[in-house]
Length: 189
Image 1 (cartoon, one colour):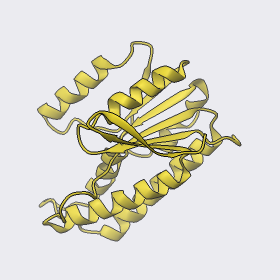
Image 2 (cartoon, rainbow, N blue to C red):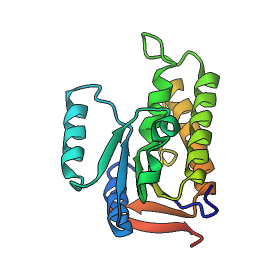
Image 3 (cartoon, rainbow, N blue to C red):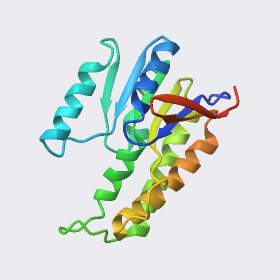
Image 4 (cartoon, one colour):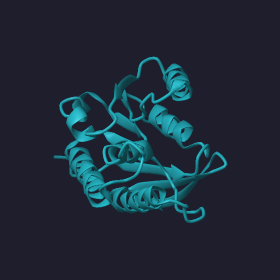
């Protein structure tokens, strides 16, 4: 088990430069990089986004596509990498929530969705704590807008906000991205 947790969180709004900055940090780290992609190709536009993201990553990086159960997906793989980029916690949370939607897209069990999200983050943090790798996790800051109009969006915003708080408390470094500029929110290094 590592005595030195190495966890960087990058948060901010949509299109604020989070992913680009995460990749820049990983390049600076040097060594082998594992990129963990949580996006799923739910339509043609999303498929194209995923294709562009794959094409834009450095050729030597390995990619692991895992829509959830990240700790299990990372088990046995992390030791081969100096840096692990997870992009992103926002979509990971979305993927878990999708398990709890009915045919009309309505949330049917908010409590179970939230508990599954916490279990996912707890397992991921345990995985990070056992690793020697530097983890860089991207997530969206979704709490700065108006109160969403529907229950699903409100519950999702609240749960992601709580998950962001939980993981940021454990992180040694947290950045907030604003218009492509990283602002240091927390640094214990």
